[in-house]
Image (cartoon, rainbow, N blue to C red):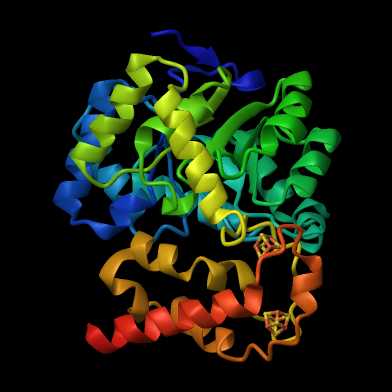
Length: 340
Ligand code: SF4
Ligand code: SF4
């Protein structure tokens, strides 16, 4: 297996990482088996976040029982220098002395970007953690390609994390060449578009066709982890059947799939449009406990305030029928809540 260099981090890894979102949905024991299995298969980079509830903790449990070195990547939504406390919590949760890559998580708006980069902002906090050797490299994750373009241009980060799948392929033209030119490592999040794509073969073969980009598909079952790994070791290009699957799903999702770019904001009712658009996938990701989460309840209640003013419609570059889809998702959710 040919390792790749993750840009100027000088970390050499197998170019298939693993993402820690799905293990939130399973027991500690199941999560530990999955994490150990993926490391046993040869995965060398594990990605998680403070925001993924007990994911860091479960990874920490798994790491206690193995000797193999792995590259750890985590992230935090805290936008000020208080992010230093988040790093310490991540270290405690994963029971390690150092996290190789720590990202500013989901910096999707320019106001947020300016906040994290200003004096006293989260970037400065991470620099302090780096100076103390508690983290190795500073990264940024964003769903907004304009923010990633600026972050790369300003050249503060060693690693960037962009959404990349056959349903949202724009990063390969807009982001990857810029990052390569500055030797910034590239992690590809959401290779299955947050659960919209169900077939691992076409999804992963598409992303793996970029040889220096490391996808981080998550898995909460051994079966899924093995399926992903198999696609990776087969090392094949896209097949005609893959292409057919891709073409069909692209057509089907063209006017439904939210790219989570936030270009439709601001909403006068302060609705988190991208989350309301992806409501079904959030429930799928967080499992049966989703409705008990406070932030989720707030999200849904705010979503109910949509006045159908249509302001967001003019801003969505993909012409998604936002108010209709919000309504449809709320109806779906209410039905689900009634029957559970
Ligand atoms: S249509 Fe609904 S979601 Fe869109 S801006 Fe108006 S209130 Fe917000
Ligand atoms: S609704 Fe459109 S503009 Fe808004 S986040 Fe989704 S894709 Fe982007």
